[in-house]
Structure formats: structure tokens, C-alpha cells
Amino acid sequence: MNGAHDMGGMHGYGPVQPEADEPVFHAPWEGRVLAMRRALGAWRKWNIDAGRHSIETLPPADYARFSYYEKWLASAIKLALGAGLITERELETGHRDPSTPKATPPLTVDKVMPSILAGGPTVRPTDAKPRFAAGQTVRARNIHPPGHTRLPRYVRGHLGTIECHHGAHVFPDSNARFEGEQPQILYTVRFTARELWGETANATDAVYLDLWEDYLETV
Amino acid sequence: MTHDHHPDDDHSHGHDLSETALRVRALETLLVEKGLVDPAALDAMVDAYQTKIGPRNGARIVARAWTDPAYKARLMKDATAAIAEFGFSGAQGEHMVAVENTPQVHNLVVCTLCSCYPWPVLGLPPVWYKSSAYRSRAVIDPRSVLREFGLTVPDDVAVRVWDSTAEIRYLVLPERPVGTESMNVDQLAELVTRDAMIGVAKVSAP
Image (cartoon, rainbow over all chains, first blue to last red; front, side, top):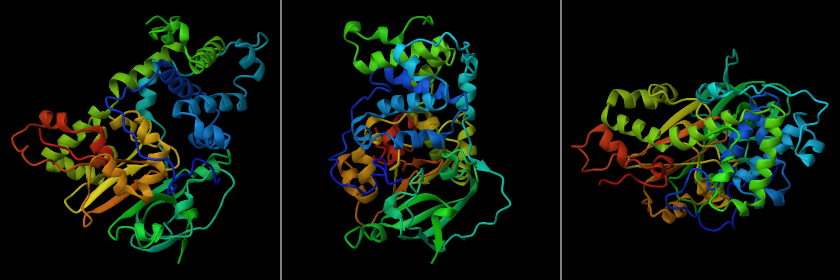
């Protein structure tokens, strides 16, 4: 979707403002939100792509206004409601609907480090032959999918060069819609800064993106 | 920490919890009451990212690569496996690639679409990395972003920006500073900063 999240190349956000000696969390609630969202994820009612899409589909004004962990909070609630883990009524009252059984959490303390260390690899076995070869010129397709996609607007329609491929990875566009992983070859593609931003860009600079085969076309 | 103790109680002014903190507390109470999350697991997750998983991990990788050419070769060929040699792996670092800074090339990592970041080696991202300013400008104007961090890259040095659009996560291998020839791997690791491994800084000799 052409959302507020797709901000590569936008102007107007001002200087980057690093913070000296920044703490991991600026308030305890931030850590709780991170942990709750991941612990809810252990129910496997959604996947990482649907999770990202739940943030992208926040109202654009909220997306702009919310901090990172405020977005995570809004997303956790949205995902849990959407999956039926909690109800609007429970959210209002703050208490479990007594007619529903108490569940057993899948993520217990002994599973926290193993789950972190295992993560969720997205590479998948494939018999598919890569359609593009290293060094080949390709064009990022000029497409505007209304759902989740990882093809940023700023490269669409532009020419790039295949740097390498990483085998087949879960395709986020379909996975976010719960239409299956549909793995396809993932490439690193190099776009020169001048191709993306015009003649005033530094002649030696380039931007590299990881793009799935369906995002690319032959020239 | 006992499990019925709420971490927000640690707030120095318990009576003026923000509205967000209260909402988060209410959500946790509900999720625990429903048996959806285990509060001890939440404690362990917070502790992992506060005390175990952070940029010191990445610094050990970099220092090793500076001092052990065979390790560096493994890191550049298959970073995921080379990093796993240290026991660092998993969430938001499932597929790692190392990119090397040289006198001719300076690398910079960003995620324009969200805030993807190599958690196993750098921990959770700083606020500036997640900011709209960094996400919007790193790809179109990396050199002025770098200048804001105090780093001027000469025009004839190529700036390569890595936009983390998939599940590949990037670790910048900074240049080893001159004057550190006599330092051992642990001393070198102390010099390596988070910002240098994102690519917004160089590593300085002490």
C-alpha cells in the first residue's frame, strides 16, 4: 500500500536527532509492549508480514504521531482483536469474559531465550531457477498493490542491477493476507543514486534493496 | 521480581503514570487474566533485550574479524553462520549479511518501510534509527545524514545505503582504526560502537 510508512526519499522531517547514552527502553511500558506483542505472536494467529501490515494500516495521522512502541501497542491490540484472542468488551472492562475458558500461554519463561535464538527464518527450499542473473539490469515494476508490499515507492519504475540472490524467501505480499508463503527468489538489487534521485546525486553512491522476483521485470 | 509485581511500579513517580503506561498495564492485566501471556515470560523477554542482547555482541564479531582473517572470510561469505559461532542468532537476525567499509566504500544501513535492524548483534534499535527523519533521508541524502553524525565522507568514497526491505539484516564491518595494532581482540571490541556498525560513525583509536 502507498502508506505513510513508505517514507524513503520524503522531505520535511528535519535533522536526525541522536540521543546520548540512550536507554534500551525510555519507560518500563515500552518493554512490556515489546514483550506482550511477541508473546501474543507465539499463538501463531498471525505472521510477521501481517504484523507489519497492521502497523502500516494505522490511520496515517496516528502513524505520524505515535512513537514506535505506541505503534506496537496499537498493533498488538488490533492483531489480538482481529484474531479473536480478546474482545472489544474485554478491552473495555479490562477483564476476561467469564464465559470463556482461561488459556495456557504458549510462551513460558523457559521458552523465551530458545524462541529468540531460533527466530523465524524465511528462507524456503525451492526448485525454482532464478529468473535474473547477477549483473543483469532489471526494472523495479511500477505497481501499486493496495495491500502489504515491501517494494518501496522510491524504486518503482527505476533500473537496477542484480547484485546476488538469497534463494527463495516467504513472499510478504501473500503472507500478510494469509494466502500462503508462496516463496520466491529474493534478490539484492543495486540502484545508483543518480538513477533514483537525478543528476545532482553523487556519481559514486548507490542504494541496495532486497526485492522479490515478482517486484522485478526484464528490460 | 515477583510476578504479581508490576514493573511500572518502578516508575519514580508512581502516581503520575502516563496514559499510555496505564493502558499498557490494563492490557497486560487482561492478557494475564485470560492466560494469553505469562508475565514471567514477559519479564524474561525484557531482561534479554536489556541485559543480554545488545551492541556488545556485534562489537565482538567486528573485533574478531579484524584480528582473525579466516573468521573475517567466513563472516563475509556467510555472516549468519559466522555470527552463530558466537551463539548470536534468531529473531530479526535470521539471515545476516556483513558489508565491509574500506578506504573506497562507506556502508550505511536503514529500513525505510519500518525499522528493521539486526537485533541479535545490535539489540533493539535506537529512537533515531526508527525516526521519520532517518528513514526518509538515509536513502536520498545519506551524506548530509552522515554529516549530522559528524562524519564527512569524501566525494570519491562511494556511499552504499542498504535498505532492509526483506528479512536480510545488515551489519557494517567498520575499518579498523590505525594505531590499534598492539591491541588484543577484547580491547578492540571495546572501541567498536553501535553507530559504527550501523554505518553512521567510524571507529576511533583511543
